[in-house]
Image 1 (cartoon, rainbow, N blue to C red):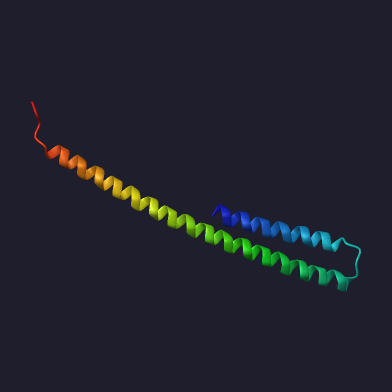
Image 2: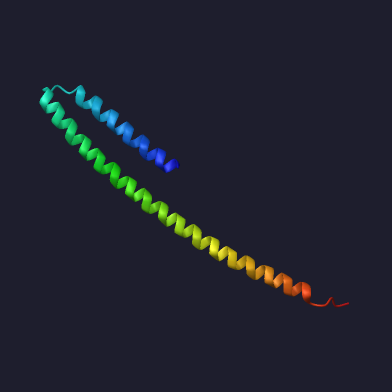
Amino acid sequence: MALKNLVKGLVIGGVVGMAVGVLYAPKSGCETRDDLAKSTKKLYGQAKERYEQALLDAEGLVERGKEEYSENKQRLNKAIHAGVEAFKEPVKT
């Protein structure tokens, strides 16, 4: 969730910064619109790439979490089994 908010903030900040910079540039309206369109396409492409990379990273983390869970579950089952077997042994006096 925090990664999603970070990406959203970067996109919004980039768009606002780009728009302010383009609007205050000493160019004609047509040039300004062209620059704005080009910058928007470029920024959109960058945001899309970062979003896709964030999804891949998240998928990797999910898979790693599943593996860790499975390994820990197996260790816990072995420990429980060993404890049950130890409990069944007669007490030596």
